[in-house]
Amino acid sequence: MTESANNITRELDDGILRLTIDKAEAGNALDADMREQLVEWFDDASDDLNVRCVVLTGAGDKAFCTGADLRNQRPPRPRPDGAPPRAQGEAARLIQRGWQRLVTSVLDCEKPVIGAINGTAAGGGMHLALACDLVVCAHSARFIEVFIRRGIAPDAAGAWLLTRLVGIQKAKELFFLGDAVSADEALSLGLANRVVPDEELPDAVTALAQRLAQAPTRAIAITKAITNRALDHDRSSALLDEAWGQELVTTTEDMKEGVAAFIERRDPTFRGF
Image (tube, rainbow, N blue to C red; front, side, top):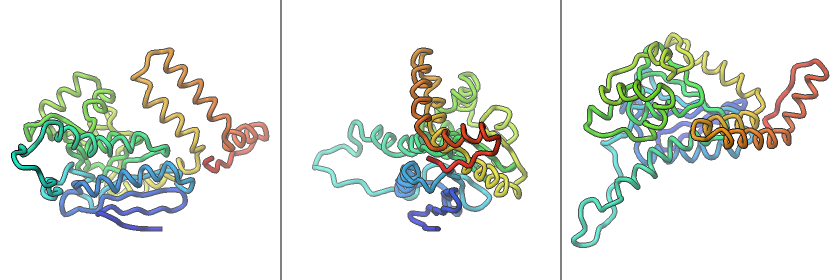
């Protein structure tokens, strides 16, 4: 099943949901409608038992996502007489309801999300990639913290994400200098899980997605949630998360199947619930 809306393509096949940012002529930059479409489909993926894994990528071979499409912005609302061009709180609200909401929808999706990085991931597009649970890069892919080049501070949850992945000193270097990071360097820094030749990216991502689509989906959801929270907790809170996570997993059919398969000395067949 394939559908398209707001320059985003959605395809569901055999448990794998593929979301493709489809505006290659603009570097797959996202406008507000595209961001909201992605949020809607990531949220929907959590509720859909037919979805076992999500793959996020960009159309073409030049860019995964180059951040915000500044050339295609919504017109402002009518303003009362005497109102300033931008009222206090409007810019912060735009960030919170825009890119932060998009990145959060990836982090909070209850299905594993693979970022298939087919080209440049810059600015908010870099942070969108880093929000994915697993990142597979084409060899020609690169990451750029482009904000400093525009005279602005990072958004789209960048400081929260990047610092946890590479440490505070390296994060400052990437933010302050804005240099491009190659796929190989991204792998060495922990920004990517795998780097493959460009022509092998689709097959490598499909193989990984198929493996995840056959895994115990609810166990992955719990594992994702407690892992994402781990660095924000003290020890007692993290262990409480772990205990309740285990409690929830024991109620699933997949857990019963996993135990039965172990006892019967066979491979389990997980159904995702």
